[in-house]
Amino acid sequence: MTCRAGNVAAFIAIAQKLFQSEKLPEAGRGVAARVFERLQTPSDDGTRYDTRYPACDWLDAALAPFIGDDSGFGAAARAIKALGPDIGWARRSSGVNGSDGYIDAHVNGMICGPGGAESRYDVQLGFSLMVPHTRYPDHSHPPEEAYVLFTPGEFRQNGGEWFDPGIGGGIHNVRNNPHAMRSGDVPFLAIWCLLTRDDD
Picture 1 (cartoon, rainbow, N blue to C red):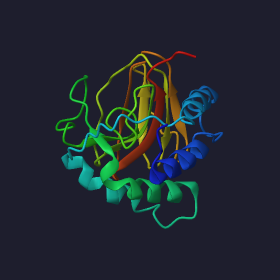
Picture 2 (picture 1 turned 45 degrees about the horizontal axis):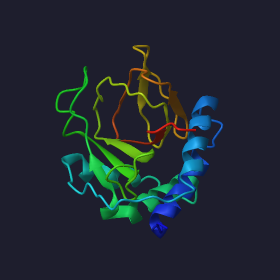
Picture 3 (picture 1 turned 60 degrees about the vertical axis):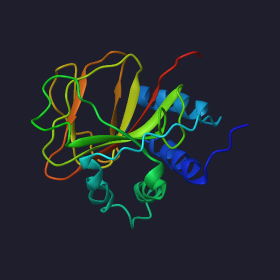
Picture 4 (picture 1 turned 120 degrees about the vertical axis):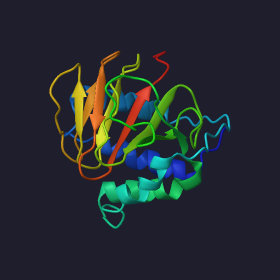
């Protein structure tokens, strides 16, 4: 039986509460509920994506406004800090309409999922980080997913208008739904979850 690291377990418990917020669309809460149900069973193949990218240096700045809070966001920020070198880092290099230099200006941190602190392939739980004034490229993928926003930032779905769901708010992306996000004057941080194998 796989044992789960304490810092991973702590983040999962905190994130689960954030994804239950009524600020999220109902469908997003539904996806998250299935993700966290699956996460009740630890699974880890030991693979770690430990390459650091330039945008990783912005993580402390993105977490700083929350690190001392007694809110769920403060707890999540401290949990992310505690995960430190166990986070699996990756970045997107494909898609259209990304801002100039977006590859170096963003990074995705994997907590549970391929190469993450708990490396597994049936589910993903992690976060996206962007430096100020960065537009993530339009992209889509088969799994539906949910986001919770930590910082000011905007989302776009299906080529529609940009919108800011507010801190603690979020979005739900249906399967293969084109979407993008962008930061403003401060670093962007949002946590996300999705099912990468749907065998329910």
